Image (cartoon, rainbow, N blue to C red; front, side, top):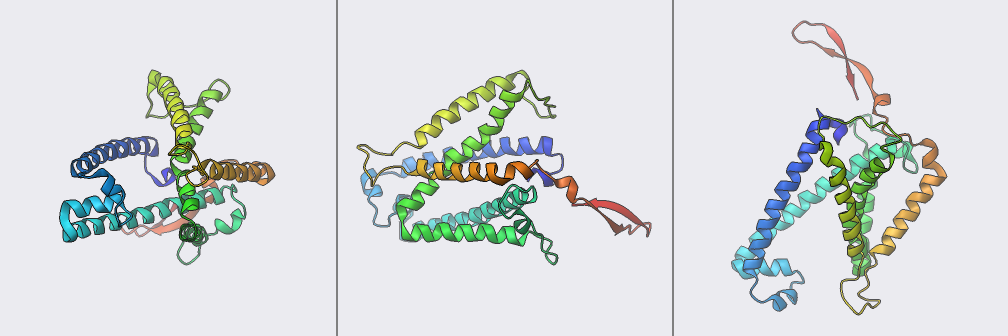
Length: 269
């Protein structure tokens, strides 16, 4: 998304920082509120609704108030899903555009009528449908898939940080306008250490003794994803993927100047 942001070197990091602060404050407020509304913890966990959070709303607002509050939760989840699919589509198109995915030429095709990557959109929709079908067929399987999301995101963040620390003496990095200065390396080391630790913890089974039923199979899902990604990289992507190719997609188009009545060339992606 930074490719479409003006002054991305400044606004991108600033948006990330503001999002973290806002999410932390609102999340802390929500947690405190939930704690005050907990009256019988064991009964809430054993809720007939199967959703402890929904039971908290019902206990706090009654049948009518709890239903209204839960409606807004469902609505927020819906829009969150839309935002996630939008972000996934953008990433799928970007990787396909850069020849990093199997059948990249097909997935990166832009519809000439809508001027949007329709094929990449349907790719994400197809995978979303598959995940929902897996959830209908096996709760344990889909939970294992969802359990990989947190460590996978964290590891993807520190991958870039680790590469920067490893290659900083071999590759010349030009710092942008948004930098931590001398605090950059200590913060990076702290981030790598924390993510490495918490990622291992997130792969642990939730209860003991560990059985086939309560085992955390997220590690198996992570291994499968890593095996597929490394295999595809070794087989084909390493020969074609060279990084973002946005400049290759720039075209000169004529736009009318309403004031002067003249045409001037502008660049458009």
